[in-house]
Length: 448
Image 1 (tube, helix red, strand yellow):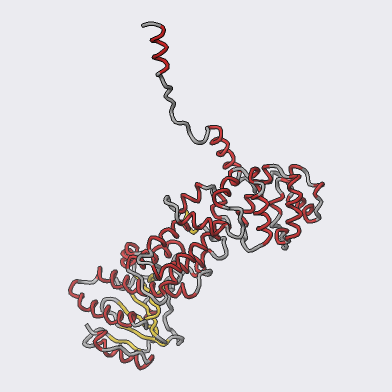
Image 2 (cartoon, helix red, strand yellow):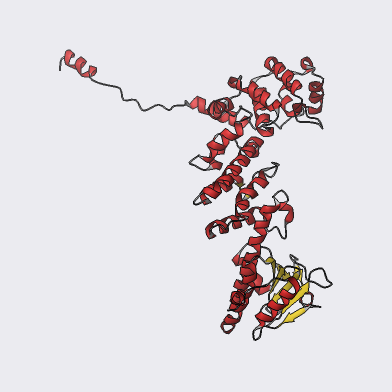
C-alpha cells in the first residue's frame, strides 16, 4: 500500500466518542457536598446566638464578626418579638448582608427561609426577593428557584404544590429529589404546599369519578415511616382530616374509598375514641364522619368476632340481632358503639382490624358485649345467651363507652330494662326504645 493510499484511508476515519454526561463529575461532587452542608445550620459550635441576636437588634452591623454572620439567619425568629416580624429591620438586615454575607451565609438564609416560610408575611417576601437577586450565592437552591420559583414567596407554595402533585415518581420521591431532605422534609414551605394540595383535592372530589388516586397521592406526600410528616405545621393535620373525611359528611363513598381512608386515618392518628389528643387539630365535622364509620366498624367487628365463636346452631339468632341493630344504624339512630371482648374474642379482634376495644378484667366465660348509644339510652347487647340490657344515660350505674377494662357486674347492674332473645323479642325492645326516645322503625325493617 502506497503512502497516498494510507493517507486516504485515514481521512475516511472518524473518532467514535461515547456520549458525554450533561453534568461533569466535578459538578456532581460539588452538588453532593452542597447537599450535605445545606442542613447544617443549627450547629452553632460554641457561638453565642443570644449575643448575635442583641447585636442584630441594635443593628450593630460592624460589631458582628465574620464567623458570627453565618448564624444571623438563626436569630431572626428568636425571642417573643422575632426580628423577622419587623419589616423595616429585615430590609436593613438584608442591605447589610450584601456587604458582609458569604455564600455560606446566603445558603443558611435559604435554609431559614424554607424552614420558617410564611407566605402572607411581607418580611418573607423581602427575603425571597433578596435571594432571587443573588441566586449565584444560593448554590443548588438558586438553580431550583430558576425552575420552581421557590423564592417567589407569595406563590412558592402553589407552584411547588403543582409540581409535586403532577410528579410521576410520587410526591415523597420528588420532594427529596429537589432537595427537601432531613429537617427540610417537614419545612413550612412544603407544609404550606401540602395544605394547598389538600384543599384542591377536597374541592375536586365531588366532580371526580374516582377520588382514590388523588387521596393516595396526598397520603404518599403526608406519610414518612408510617407517621404524619407535618405534626409541627399549624394547619396541616386539619387539612388532611378535611380532605380525607369532610367530603363524606353528606355523601357516601364507595366501599374501596371508605375502607382505604378509614384504615389510613386509624394508622396515622389511632382510634379517636381512646386517643382523642391525636385528633385535636382535626375539625369536628371530619371527626364526626370518622366516629360514624367507627360505630359501624365496631358493630361489624362485634358480630364477626362473635360469629366465629358461637355454634352453627346459633346462626339464626345472630342474624336476627344483627339485622335489628343494623336497622337503627342505617337510619342514623345508633350514634356510638364500643365492644368489650374476653381473651378469646380479643385474639380474633386483633386479626380483624386496628380499632380500639375494651377488655374484661376477668374471664367472662367466652362472652363479648356491644355497648351502644341510641338517643338518651345506653344499650348493652350480650353475646351468646346474654340478655339485652338498657339504661338511661346519666343515671347511676350506667355503663360508660370507650373504657379500657370492664367487669361483668358493671354491665349488668341496675339496668332499667332487660330482655332475653326469645320469641319476638325485637318488637318488645323496639317498643321500649320508642317509649323512651320517640325513635320508631318500621316492623319490616328490623324483623328477619
